[in-house]
Length: 135
Image (cartoon, rainbow, N blue to C red):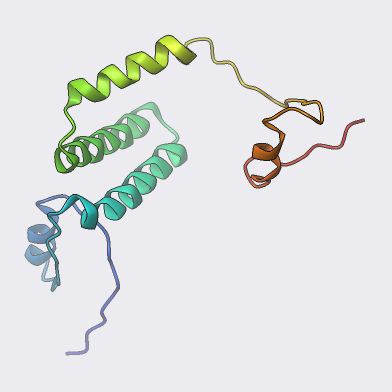
């Protein structure tokens, strides 16, 4: 019987391999237990899940994808030996310093004078902050 192999190379939940095997899918795995080895896989997984949040179109789908993000965050915290309480304190500290997102404020453009120290940061990140021609 002819087979086809696909590159997966991503972090999966603990029960996924068994589900694949149950569906007659052969699985080749590696176990990464050091924070240094697994960190890039967690980062890629979080990007994947965040992208799925961005693509979801219903409240239920968004909630399901946010739950996946939280599961990745919990796993990453465990591997890095960071407590949920420590993360929550960092979140609260940032809220005190920068605020939350309750108002829904969106910044459309910013304008800086030429000698502003932040100018280089924005110029060096054109994909994130494209220049707008002044009218």
